[in-house]
Image (cartoon, rainbow, N blue to C red):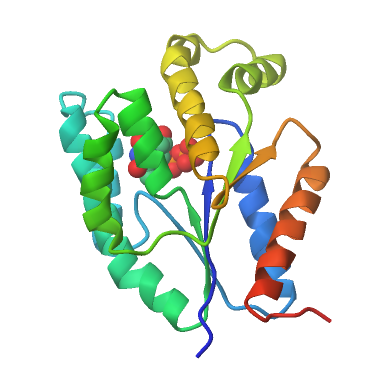
Length: 214
Ligand code: TYD
């Protein structure tokens, strides 16, 4: 049985990754591929319960280290229960956020030592890293300006800008550390231009595993 591709998608708030994920899914399906679209935190019933816990704004007393371990726990379940079996059965998996989110949000954003986040997540991912990671590169400042222009200023978002910028810088550092796996996509362009680049990369990957389009 031919293995499927494991594709992950990353980026900061308002980078347009949701739109590109939908286009990727449509594109692969239109060519007859079996695709599983999933997300983190979440993706299985247990992992979705962890998602509710970790993203609940009422849990403001949650320690950073607790949060980091909950994201990793959700991932441990997701990878074993859903991602790995799907990829091994020949399905292509597109996952909205994965381990890089923990590196950038929990380490670059919250300040937990990267080595700690890496070692906890090494246990979580069980040797299964993405074949490719699309980083939709759009500065949070630019994304916010775009949103303000269409919806008006948002005070809370402005207060959070410092955190989002740290996360964004984290992505750029990671992308330079792993240029083979993480593909940086300039997301300040038009949707269809961005997707053209994404599609070219997908075609290359599919050709690499022997899936040739007609
Ligand atoms: P979500 O509503 O799915 O937002 P987005 O559209 O930005 O993906 O919320 C996911 C949030 O969880 C997002 O703010 C990033 C954060 N997150 C982490 O901090 N660490 C992680 O490992 C993951 C997977 C997500």
